[in-house]
Image (cartoon, rainbow, N blue to C red; front, side):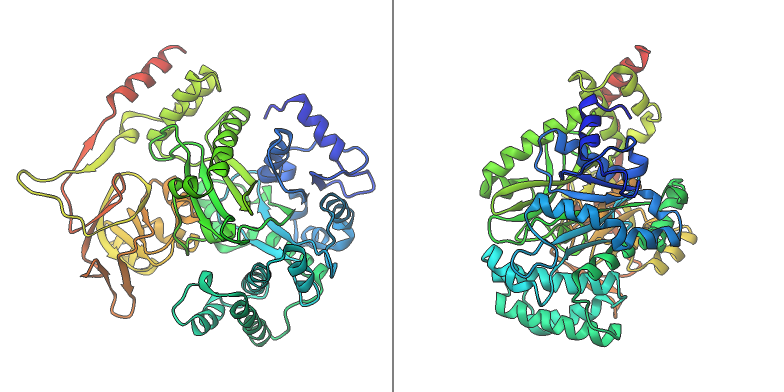
Length: 548
């Protein structure tokens, strides 16, 4: 990858001294000394791109990176997780932020994220709010002036740490939430209720894990780093690499970054955006946003989100900043970008950017548009569209029979265009068995979670009750060419009876269902369809190829 000379200078200026481990890096921090030139292979693309965004003047919280070299073996991972390795970088991060990890008055809270040299959305673990404890919570309340934020962050930490590090099933924490909330969302709980919920979570953690939640915040950080490295070999990560021809040996980096808080109130939130529509390629921002939420709420697939209209109405300045940042990212990176962001008290922070997954038709349009705008040259556009043909870019559409009116059962947010017709399957075993028997399958789930990736291999489409268009599972479905509808409020699933309800109509597992990803509509039975070619797009693509 080519980089501007000023990026190299920035990297060298912020590089750790020779006494530091050669696979330890900083960004947004002042670190003395010099270092051999970093690369995406060593930092992972997430951290490397964070460096580039910082150079562009975009708002990026400071952090440090434990490079992919630490992922080479169990021994190397243990070394990377040890405080002896990351202590110098933590000191630089504390100096940059003005906060201290474990300080009872001004505590620094951290996110710990994976980042391989290639994009693997949702396949590895993330831990947020590292650094909260009984000793630091009061200081965080005084620092932010928001007791609700503090207790919400603490209960998230206990649940996330319990699930990822200690192996406590998420259902254990969900049961406590349901018991206390009595049918309400956690977003409706006040700080006293969140405090009570956190204490219940701490008790559940101790009971199920067999030991208390770690109150030593440096031990929290050590275990979090170790867990993220370990997730490189998780079942879903290994399956994803096998399906996409990604080598096991490249490893993941771990990025440790100062936390910003989307759950800080009405003018805060978390979002994921694409600089263009990943289904059609249309040149417009494509954003999912949740107010008063953290990033995992959007990408986990367990919550439904708002689109850009609501964000633009309530936070117009943030929306304007996103539009400016979107244009800057595309020109700097030379491609359509998939980015994550947080808004804290009306202030925008960018947390990640990468080339966005897109459908074939979108790939053609985006390449042609970027060429016309002078962002990429003809050779790059030709390379990006070389594998596309008329068949891959055809679009299937639902067609009404003569004299009939199409009556959909329900509507949902479309994460992936096209039409899928198949039998309803409620789990992976059913999807696998019916696919093996030659049947087309529609996978229907409550949440859009990446744990369903294996089931998607056997399905033509995915329909979920919850989830956002930019949740990791939706991104994977789009990459796999599966029609995907998420956040269907009218959907109710009864797994015991093996049936579902859509707007009052009961459908059994095995019944036929049609997903219209073009319009975000759901039909009972097998709808009539037709294939359509985008003649103008095919002609433009042919002209591009003739110039070579």
